[in-house]
Image (cartoon, rainbow over all chains, first blue to last red; front, side, top):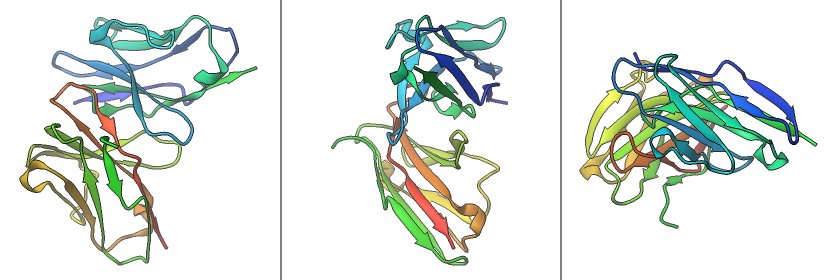
Length: 104
Length: 113
């Protein structure tokens, strides 16, 4: 079965603090993982995908096949990072999401 | 705007009525997905198409729900005999191939009264 879990519904951090949004997946085949973001009143959009190995807006994520995880990290959170973050397997199987709130 | 578009943006209907939503994907995209999203939840997968073929349907998709994608272009999602529990945001997304980025529409918000 294909499944994505995100254990935290809400994560609040202060501006400048490090952020880690957790994502775990279950999939029997070769996984491909994505992070999507939804800012207030905007449509869902891609943030990054593991295959690209890039940093977008200071965010990075590493696929750990042994732990079946794809955690999203940023060393210094900004207020504009406040949004809903969704981890997605194969590009279309979504987790329940984590709301990130960055406090001033 | 060459992105994914959905119509209508909002729909209010009485319980028991049928409703139909339309999604126009990005033109060269082969895959088209339908999701349902309720407040505070992630997108729940309903079904997807590869060109005109409907390849997978979620168990969430009861017999009252049907989707089509004639000629592999636009898609429609119909809900028959709507119930209050059907009230949600219905999202459409498209992607070029499997395992590629999904581009989302703005969604259709359905309210069943």
